[in-house]
Every structure is written in C-alpha cells, then in structure tokens.
Image 1 (spheres, one colour):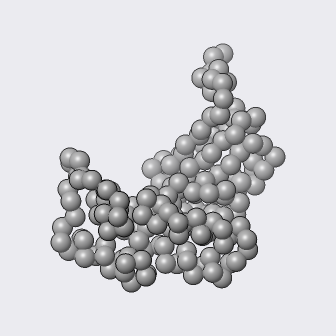
Image 2 (tube, rainbow, N blue to C red):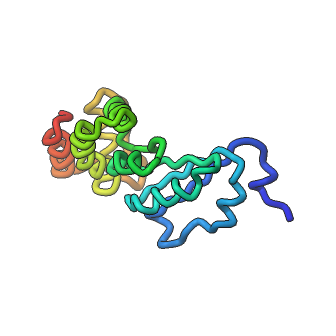
Length: 173
C-alpha cells in the first residue's frame, strides 16, 4: 500500500506536540516507518521520562530527539536529547547555546544554575504571556519583534511589568 512516508525521499520529520496531543501517543508502526531516516522529535511537554524512553528505544536507529522548550532543556540533555526548539532562543540564543555547551562538557552545576535562570523568562514568553511577550522581549534585546497580528493583542502595562520582572529578577535585564 502507498505511504507518503516511504514514498518521499530524504529526511523525514516527525513532529509530536505532546502538550497538545491530549494523551495520544505516537504509534509504534509510525515510528518503524522512520527506522532508517534521520528524525527529529519535537517535544513540547516536560515529561522527561517520556523523552528518555524515546531516546532509549531509538538508540540503534537514526533518530534524534529535540526538547521543545528551554524550560526543561537541561533535563532533556541529561536523558539524551541532542538540542531544542526553543522560543526563548529568539531572545537569549547565546545563553541557550551556553547551556548546551555546559551540558555537553559535563559542567552540571553551572548548567543547573543557568537552567534555573531560564525557566521563568521561558514560561513568560510561552505559556504564561505567549507571543505578545516574546515580541516585547525581542524589542528589549534589540530585535524587531513587530506588532501582534489579530486576534492577539499587545501586552497590557501590568503584563509588560510582569514580563520585565521575570527577565530582570533572573539577571537578563
């Protein structure tokens, strides 16, 4: 039978957003289709045991796991993830690269301290205040975040102050 997975040449990307999947899991037969391809799994759920299990079960295959958030990036590195797809990288990209370097070189205490400082700003630009917060933070760091597109609205004054506190109390502003 025809399968777009096997019919398409080149690298395949399997994107599973666990936080939005309402408990559904990737079927084993789908994973088996990808056995001989480089795969990146984007995980937007801080369930480190699941990330670790996927890394473990695919260690003999061309399969790579990426964390989907800077909020648990260090933990994902600890269980075998190779990187992350992180909204916070739009603002604190060099710091996330430093976290990777620290983890890969085994400097766990320094990595832990840096990871702790990234959690609150990351939560603000993702699940707490979202895209408007990311755009505002980009402006603070010298990037053009641009205006929010409808239906999103710019941050209120109180939200902007909340965002500023999240970055400043962690030493970023």
